[in-house]
Length: 349
Ligand code: MRU
Image (tube, rainbow, N blue to C red; front, side):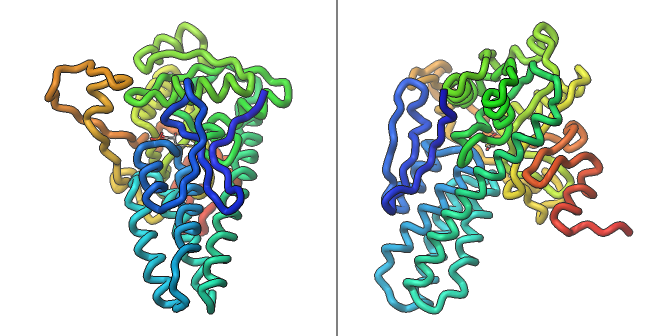
């Protein structure tokens, strides 16, 4: 049994697991140009907030390594252009912007182009390694929070393949498996692109975790019928007040958790917080092509020309979130206070 991973930096090349093809085909792609990295992010070959940040960082470092100028100012102009291009690939997950900004900052002090190139790659590698460490910590904290609860529901894939390793929401299940704690995980299929059915089920099966697939519309009944004790999800962006953007359908689960009086947990590294945004109303929500809703596996399921609304994320109000689990510890309401303290931006009046 193995915990799968999706991003490798090997022999100066970025290699990703093509998540578009899972679970039927396990294909690895080498991404060379910045356009290939952009395309892989837009088409969800690489996906999940932390993984997008890591892939974007390697993509930018690798593009910069091929700039031919020896002039540092010109180098930074080219870097800014590629930064703007990659950052525009997906708007909701703040981890992408966060990782790319870290790269820009890392190269600022360099006095030569060679020095700047080396700094960019070194920073991308640190971001990658850090994420694995952080996800493991999130898993440890979540295991302690779940205590003797075993029946847990999740949505989308906030797993190992959406991060460097272990995942956020799925980290406790992988770690539990390694340590002899058995969970019964209920995975919502996650329409329209089936990240739950295709990716979470596959990933948990790879590491030997007991997982049961349900359609999104079965969540309420399943909570009741199967005695779900907690719901845990990942995040794409968390505002300063705790409002959390995550895969579309997450808010439905939060409201259900509230109605059934079970805890609703968000698991995310600190790179997913955006304290420049006061609340969820300011989080940009990506809207994706209509065909994702009108077709399934390339097969048309709705009348041609059907009018579609296809938001990829929703924003769960902080009031429905029992706790937010980060690598730095477990945050509880009042989130303005607990998040503010974590980021050093809160001072009691
Ligand atoms: O559109 P996706 O598949 O990139 O959406 C991913 C999610 O919503 C995840 O839950 C989130 O990015 C957290 S991944 C650890």
